[in-house]
Length: 451
Image 1 (cartoon, rainbow, N blue to C red):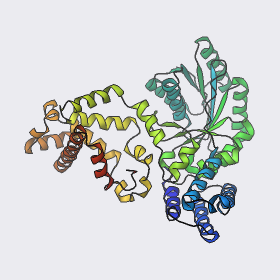
Image 2: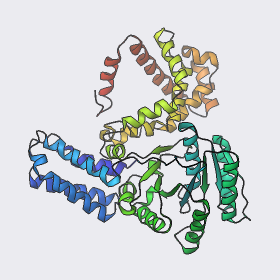
Image 3: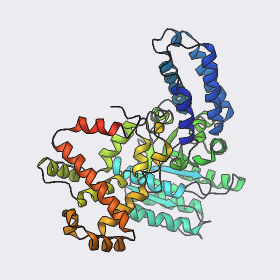
């Protein structure tokens, strides 16, 4: 996420971290580089101008000049200004209204609106323990109604049926009536998207807004459109009075222009960001955490929350107990751990939140990818239960059979077994209480890790 901006900013600020003294000249040069990084990230020009002016004003003042570590202080100032631009505080959904609380979703076609409805419904169901019903008023694209019905079935929430021949406002009123009669906590209503902002679209969504009187009106926008995302959000806000914005596809956004522009231009908070295609890939937007990621500081808090929410704690406890009792770590355990990583959004999502990952060379980061983990899982699934528990049995003919069954090559099986042997060795080290030793060993392979 925001890889291009992160790399440029961390490279620019890295040399200042250990500086003993800051002068107006090196502050000026640093801010010139920061400005270029923001321009390349497609941040809106008024946002760039304000951020640079604020940083310069604070950087050349007494706050830095009296500091014992002025280089670090400048990095801190940039971080604080990024947070301020993105909204300073996390703004939660307002669910305190009389149920059913109605959430109206708006956005352009292709922004990921329908998928976001399902992601939000899943989040509310799993983390807030709310009963949710979803409905679609997108009568112009029948596939959207079918898509939402399918997604609702996958995540286990109610779907209110609608038909392309119906009027969207009639659907909205009927869905609200259904949610009320069935004592649902939340109704999420999906609206039609268009390829661009037009009068007919705005007129329809204003009628829907009047009919539903939603507590939350969220604008869903593709973050990869950069500052255009902020401009489109402003056009919708002028017509609808939005309560917040959802940025989608941030996992594929190397620039970050939308994240840094939306709040400033619309005055509305970013409430969520989509970080992948799966229905679990939605995160609450924390400006301070996103600013930390942009500056290569990682986001350990979000990572810890994901572990607590998405990892099977009972399964993890069983594995820990098994290892401490000296029963060993087998290939089934290895596969289970890979599946747990998948629940957390995959290894790339985790790496994105680790401090110092921006300092790891790109060719090293690219060697670790989720496709490789899927290949490993396929290889393990092609083994017999006995082979999984006793990897030493896997020799020539068995390797060929496993490779054939998993659609891989024998060398892939050999590589996986070597990786597993290294993991086994690591687990034995942990069993003997050698965690500190293991972490020191990892440090040489993972530059930037804080130990």
